[in-house]
Image 1 (cartoon, one colour):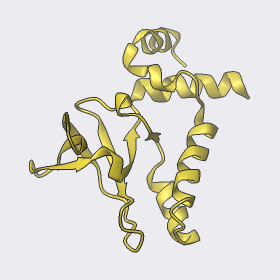
Image 2 (cartoon, rainbow, N blue to C red; image 1 turned 90 degrees about the horizontal axis):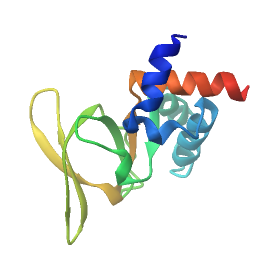
Image 3 (spheres, helix red, strand yellow; image 1 turned 45 degrees about the vertical axis):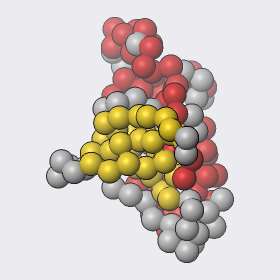
Image 4 (tube, helix red, strand yellow; image 1 turned 120 degrees about the horizontal axis):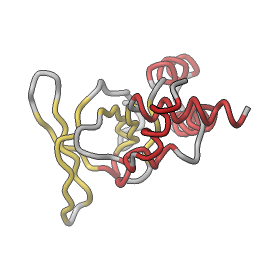
Length: 139
């Protein structure tokens, strides 16, 4: 582990959301949220694998423009699907809630409401480095 890279990552305010966690906590939080959806054991396993290197987002403050996210719509319990990757392009607030504008890799845009989805953010390289350091310290 490169100490200079770790110090730089720790000094970056954008990484504050991972300072008090580790990979076990991240995996547990993701798994707990997926289990609340009461999906099959097979789907649970697939979704947990698909969300490796992601972190569950429960606060809009942890999402910034440029972040890569996946989500699950929680409004329709019969149709629980994990989305592909999308890039956050804009975050707005209106009378109905918090809107997140996403961009596909085909350069199309669409909007979702934060409160209607479970959202998982892809961890940056710096966040992964911090988590590895925290795993080392905690174990």
